[in-house]
Length: 423
Ligand code: GDP
Ligand code: IMO
Ligand code: MG
Image (tube, rainbow, N blue to C red; front, side):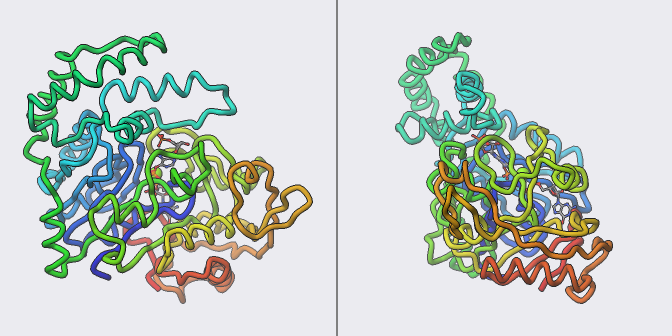
C-alpha cells in the first residue's frame, strides 16, 4: 500500500467505498474522512458485524488506526452519538475517533432548512437530498456564517457566533413556517455535544503531518462520487462539497502532491439515488433485476436506487477529473445471472454523437449508445483470484479497464471483507 491513498467514488455514490476502506484500513495508521457529513451511508461487513457508517470513518474497527473526521467535513454530533453507540454495542469503542477543529457543525436549523428548501421546489427540480442539512451547512460555511467544532470548545465565542447568525436563520425558518430557535436552546445542545465529544475535537494537522513525515500509511475516505461533485457533477443535483481527489487534498490537509495513489471505486454497473440526469437508467426487467440482486436501497435513506448499465463515458470522465491511479471494481457478482451485459460508450445528443461527458442540460437529453457483451452465467462469489473468474467475466472487467484507461487493482465479488480479488 502506498503511503497516502485516496479512496474516491467514481460514479454517483454508493460504489462501495466503505468496504474498500474497511479492507485497506487494516494496514492503515490513519484514516481521514475528507468531506461530506452524515449524508454518507458506507456499508461495512466484517468480523464485528454489519454497519452503515454515516460520519465515522470506515477504519474505526482497527483499534490501532487513528480515525479522523477531517477539516472538510460537516458534523452532526447527534447522529455521531447514535452511530458511536451502535458501534459500542458491537464492541467497537471508538476511542480512536477524532474530529478536526475546522469541521463545521450541522445545527438543528440546517436540517430543518434542508427539508423545507426541498419541499419548496417542484418535483422535477428536487435534488432529493438526504435531508441531513448538508447544503445549508456548507452554504453557511461559504458565507462565513458557519459554526465550527473549534467554537464548541470556547463558550463565549460560541455564544457570539450563534447570536450573530440566529436572527437570520430564524427569519429563514419563519419564511418556511418552521419553529424558531433561541440562543439558549442551541447553547444547551452545544453544551451536551461538548461534554460528549469535546475531548475528541483536536487540531489534527500536526498529527497528520507527523504521521506523513514518519512514513505512516494514510487513507483518505471520500463521500459520494464525482457525478455529484459541486463543481464537476450534475449541478444543481449535486452535494455541496467535493468528493474528488482534489477535495481529498483540501479536506485532509495533505497537499495534492502528497497523495500517492487515487483509487477510483466503481460498481460494474451504475446506480444513483436522488434527482438529476442518469443516462443509462433502466426502466425494464434488467433494471429491476440489478436492483433486486444488488440490493440497491440507500444506506442512509432506504430509498430505492435508480439502476443502469455501466457508463464508461462517465467513469472515464471521473478518471480524468480525479487522476485515478487504479480502479476498484465492485459488485461483479451482481451480474452473475445476466445473459448479456451492456456498456455505454457514447451518447446521442440531438443529431450529434459524442463520446465525452457533456454538461447537465445535455445529459438530460443524452441517449446512451451501448456495446453488448456476453454474460458469464455462473457464480463468482467464491472467486478469490483473477484465475478463479470465468473467462467471460475476465473479458468484461478487461473491457471496462480498457475503456476507462486505468488499471484494475481490486475486484469485489460480495459484500464481506474477504470477498475481494487483488490484481
Ligand atoms: P459506499 O457509500 O460507497 O460505501 O457504498 P454503500 O455501502 O452505500 O453501497 C454499497 C452496497 O453494496 C452495500 O450494501 C455493500 O454491502 C454492497 N457491496 C459492496 N461490495 C459488494 C460486492 O462486491 N458484491 C455485493 N453483492 N455487494 C457489495
Ligand atoms: P455515499 O457516501 C448516494 C445524493 C442525494 C442527492 C444529492 C445531494 O454513501 O456514497 P445531500 O444530502 O448531499 O445534499 O444530497 O446527493 N447523495 C448520495 N447518494 N450516496 C451518498 O453517499 C449520498 N449523499 C448524498 O441523494 O441526490
Ligand atoms: Mg453509500
